[in-house]
Length: 173
Ligand code: SF4
Ligand code: SF4
Image (cartoon, rainbow, N blue to C red; front, side):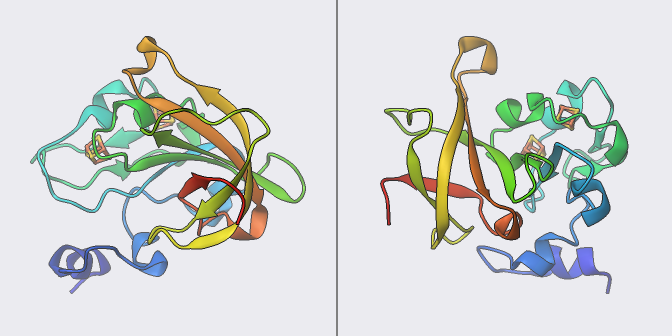
């Protein structure tokens, strides 16, 4: 059984990081170190493919059947534009920029709560299970109808937590 087959047959609500990193939408560490890129954490085999159709760089493929897990077929063509983030109904795509600064990563994520956070606001950065990881700082907030009514918030986090943090809560620890 391949790693992907094991993931498909898993009944767990949330996969562990080492399992998610084996899915076809997760870029290599080499690619992550080159600059902003989409990180796709879609592990549900559902009939869905807006991530594929919206990407003008043809970086993502779902193909046929439409229940395939999305693949980052050309990691180097992805420029981190974020168009797939706002089109994904599963809130399963993030933009990760490990080159933001020497010690920090910029993580852009879909954010559905209101009110929106303020620029420079300190927030609690959380892992995939909603557990506190570290402090984050809001860097950018994008909210526009042109973004498919999906708000995108960019937070800055310590680089060592790049693969851990995937959400945040407002307020300090
Ligand atoms: S971030 Fe932009 S270029 Fe990269 S996969 Fe998404 S839509 Fe394509
Ligand atoms: S749009 Fe989102 S939920 Fe749909 S296949 Fe792509 S990553 Fe998965």
